[in-house]
Image 1 (cartoon, rainbow, N blue to C red):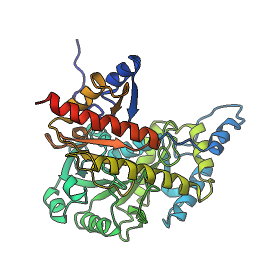
Image 2 (cartoon, rainbow, N blue to C red):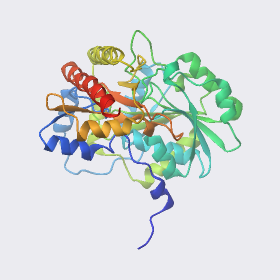
Image 3 (cartoon, rainbow, N blue to C red):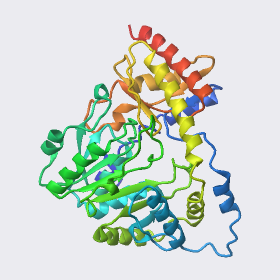
Image 4 (cartoon, helix red, strand yellow):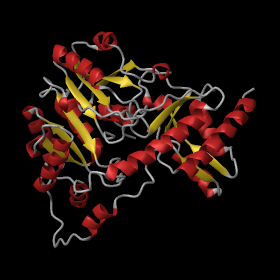
Length: 399
């Protein structure tokens, strides 16, 4: 039998989805499973953007331009301008989800064997995109004890080698919920300029910042115009995860031209989703007020419940809709499997993402989990009831 490729063998499984068979089996047995493992919001997708697709009268479903419809790129540029970013339609390439934007950035800016520095824990699929591009991820640690703040400038300097080509961040962060400040981003700017590096900034959660804090984009950093590459998506912003539409935004014309060639090779982004995305740009400016307040209430409830549990450590996330928690156990993946296979509370259980999959350094995150507060407050309360009881039973089980 022929062997699969090295990259195929190295491609890591998703910590977000790898336990799905256990959850499916639990549901088939009649149990309720509270899904805190995946960032799939239960907030309804705005009706007006779904209606824009339903009311489309196309006689031929044709290819769109490889860079995306001009009308959508114009609207998207206007959206970024409202965020105080100096962006035009000529800086934007529409991608098939944020995932393709990340992949295009890595393949356009890094050669096989090049290195990219990423503070860990980080969005697990960055590992997969790096494997596909032949790129080496160099992790530098942030810790739950320090609320996952940006590592020190000394840590970045120590990680830079002749093969380093880029730094990547997610702001606000998935999986930690940490919101990088303008001052932290300025540190990254100085490092990128000093070592002539790209800064990839995944800003999928830019609207979700709490407690009066504001998002600051890498594209707003003075002096980084030819270094910064913004990676974006409508998935989380409008609760439209199934609409695979993202964007890569850069002022660097060489990067843009390279990304466009990759975009031409895959032909075009999907048409109906671009129609949906364009309609989303016309939502009223106060649309996010209600959504933001809802996520903040969910965050406050989840963190309050977690911090009240014996032995659990959970920083208060400043953005996105994820929280990382350290549990009083040795192996969170074993615990998460046991929750789905063997534990029931009122015929319910909870599914979480074991955190080790969000680290590149072996052995880290073994006693941590990521939770997405994308369910309503009643469901979150029920999930926390399950978790609290499960921790007690699991502790006795392991004695």
